[in-house]
Image 1 (cartoon, rainbow, N blue to C red):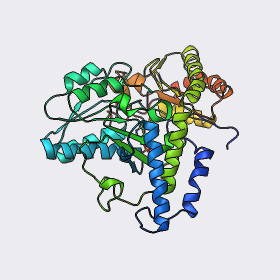
Image 2: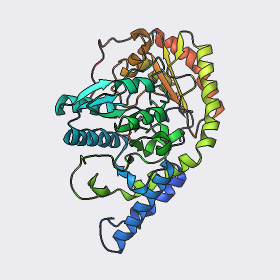
Image 3: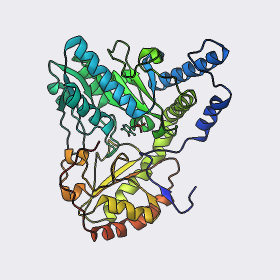
Image 4: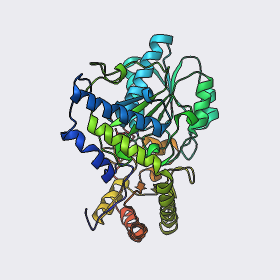
Length: 397
Ligand SMILES: *Cc1c(COP(=O)(O)O)cnc(C)c1O
């Protein structure tokens, strides 16, 4: 604990919940067998593994055998895209990948790689000014040869929630596999793969008070998917490698709690979020909200400030004790406007000055007030620092 520091970057990562840590601990030292082993120690580990799978399945309203554990949200997105793309090409010769322009890099860069190095064709859906995908747009963009649709459930950078259930219903009508990256959404919204008619859904534990380095992929029964990591027969042959039992137990417990407490967590955060948004828009000149005004994550506030270098603002905030983000934590340190802010049509003068403030368990009304006291001055100060222009948007690996 840092007494004079305030953490406002829960979309980047969260601390592990004490209850989650407690559930995990015995699996480091007491129940340490390999779940693939036949003996007693292996059986104990396997029971923990299958128990965790059942908890995850219940939390997402899926069948037990539809859950595959991976090493993180990024791996889940990779397995979904690559696994389905390869299977669709092999079975049907389908090569078209239809994705939104507001995907996390885990999806976007994977799709780029499939295009560059594996001969797939990448097509982008349109989004509106809030970064939202219109289901009608998905309907008209699907055509013969579409192998997969991927639309992020709730955006990490601008918080916008997509109409996933309607998109799911269209994809089902058209018999095209539908993947959604729910790594942010699973932390804050009630998840239900039946209601949403998704075929694949990625989650990662460290966004909902679980440990880093563990994720899961929901794969609807009957979805063709090639494994992309070969080796043993773990995870029904879809993801080779000895399962990380303590972390899987942690993911399951963290997801169970997030889903069980979803209403109380979000009803505490929404008023704090709205107070923050209103305060910033009132107190800071030439400021705007990015993302959807109402259909956004309960903990998520994101802004653009005209004529500000977002990285400079982050440094000033950090020096003042506030940990925020410019949007995605997975960014290099040079000032660049993000693909996402460009996709929602922000000009360069605005899109360089992005700020993401994401709230969580430790956030108090007092912290929001303190943030609002310092932000206007820091934005003005940042406006006196010239924006180091690095030219056009670079493709970041
Ligand atoms: C954090 C995040 C990821 C990546 O998850 P990791 O577990 O950190 O690999 C993918 N998609 C979204 C939307 C995220 O917020």
